Image 1 (cartoon, rainbow, N blue to C red):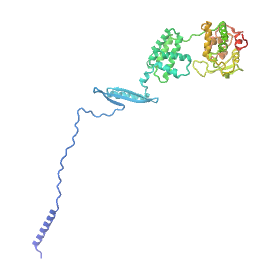
Image 2: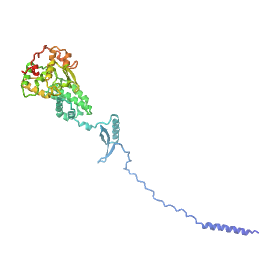
Image 3: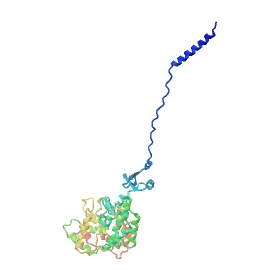
Image 4: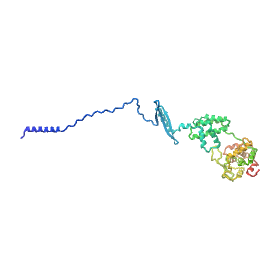
Length: 413
């Protein structure tokens, strides 16, 4: 039997129990509000501060004492293994950038330049001294000229990069004013010009056009001149006096008389005579090889085979074979002995080289053709031998000349 009120009570009890159970569960703690923290303060932007600039390559900013700025640009590079630099300072960054950009472009196109500071310190005198020190093949007379030029105050003060055509002309005129012959001055100026051109090929900042213009002016205005043709020939009396005095000098070790007679008949220069070697002599064909014969362009290695006249061969065969050289003497000593005897005898304006002129003239006077003369003298075709071909005298003035026998020992008095 069901009781309606009992059912209602049961429902109420269940609801009460559920309510108690829910009440027994502790409610979660409500979230507590997070206290607000102070936001980081932004740094106040200074009115005077500048925006940070991008670093400029090859450029250093310099803060000057007066509050201004300068910009130094430095570009480094190697020239012949040596580190060099180009450096400029500008008051404007824009100008510094433009110079840097232009300079780098020029270096890429032409290579790193030699610094102007290094080039400007090189004087003309320094170039002349450098050749004196380095060129070991330069001859004695040229060395004396270079030494004179290198010590001259004008060239010690003149930088080679500042050289002008007027400098060359003024110097040459000053030398002429000091009573030097135009031919002598021409030798100095030609050597100076050649040395400067030589230095330019080795990197010196020498203005080539200036040198050429200056030398052209000197030639055109006759400030300098080429050597005049020399026609001095010894007379038989002059030769007899020099030879007699030479033989009478018992203290003299040099066979000067023999060298004089050989120079006439062989037509050889003094330096060539003292370089003749036994190994280069061909006694069957009467020829000998003349080593390093003088040549306007070939200073070394111009070896020429020449014919020996009978008189010259006789003198060679009279020499002792106790050296590799036929005439083993210093040409400077021979020249000094020649001048000493000539000056004591008051024989004026006669040089040892005039004996070669005498010998070549004699060959034409006895009727030899220029082809055969050149085979003896060593001249090339069309060379200077042509000026000897118009001799006026005919015949052999040395016919029956006793000195050939005397110097070869055929006669002793």
